[in-house]
Amino acid sequence: MVIQYMDKKDKKNELNNNKKAEDVKKERKYAGKLAFYIGSLNKGGAERVFVNLAEYFQNKGYQIVMVTQYQKEDEYVLAEGIRRVISDIPPEETTGSRAVNFYRRMSRLHRIWKKERPDLVLSCVGKNNFMAVVTTMFTKTKPVVSVVGEAKEEYPNRLMKALANLLFPFASGVILQTERSKSFFSQRVSRTSVILPNSLNPLFIRERFRGEREKRIVSVGRLDANKNHEMMIRAFAGLAGRYPEYTLTIYGEGELREHLQKLIASLGLEEKVFLPGVVPDVAERIEKAALFLLVSYSEGVSNALIEALALGLPVIATDVPSGGTQELIRHGENGLIIPPGDEEALKAAMERLLSDGEYAERLGEQAHKIQERLAPERVNRQWQEYFESIM
Image (cartoon, rainbow, N blue to C red):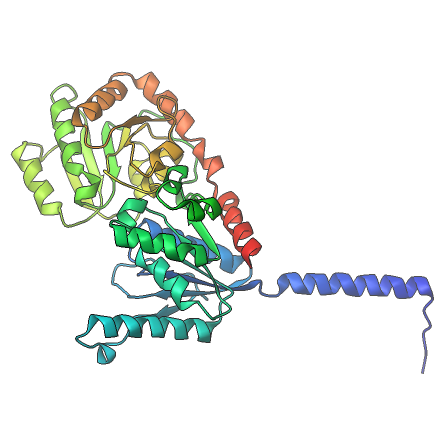
């Protein structure tokens, strides 16, 4: 048997090497457990943000559980390894009493947190934030609430606003998306809130198209009253005579499809205005377009607008009450901003860009720079640093 003796220097080196090995091992161990709580994964802006964040944190070593109240048909697909839990009460437990059903939903959600034991849960959209704060009480899970849309839309009456101001201070964190949103809540809430942006969808990170642009005006959004596609179509109709070579294409689906199709027919624009529905390759469909429009009455920080800017499209967007458009566009520098519901202002802005191709190109060049500001790794890192400061 050979016995090796080490001097003090050798022992110190071995201890240092062991310490480094332990540090590497710790880095490879899972970083913690996060839960994301939302109504469903139905294809929409908030849902996509949650899915993207979940995948990012999973790649950083976190164990992820996605908790949704419902499961719908047309949903985003979760990355492999992310577990899904449905929080709604099963049909056999449903009663005729709304109060009893609400209590059972709360109890079920509380049991989920007790069983899953996430270090932190991120919730969003209206009542979900209330549910997250209340059901994590007396657990070790830290709730973080987020308001990703227009605050007045998520909390539309005095009771909802009062509940937000009452419950949000009990959350471990409050995330808003615009400075203007802070003014909606009490000083106690706004003072402790942080502003965190949405990251850019990686599919829209690419070189800007610099060839001859197609004579197409495009928009992306759900076909509902808030998006105000009717005004968009009427404004386009007012310019169609002067720009007969241009078409308007609105990508999206919704309850107003039939109404919009009848409007298009009544204006004689069946060969000029198209509603192709939801398509999987939006970036490829719109990157060569001459102009992008977003004319909603209200939005948070629109993902569709972020993506259009990132592609370097000349854009026109409404100044929504949340301040979301102002967060993204500097009027006259990287896009044009108009008042919501102002058809004449929309026509004038469209006329300006369609009649001056050089000016439209300058706006598009500046718009493209948002890729750097909202790059996924940069923005997601901000979310990670915030979560880790709480945990």
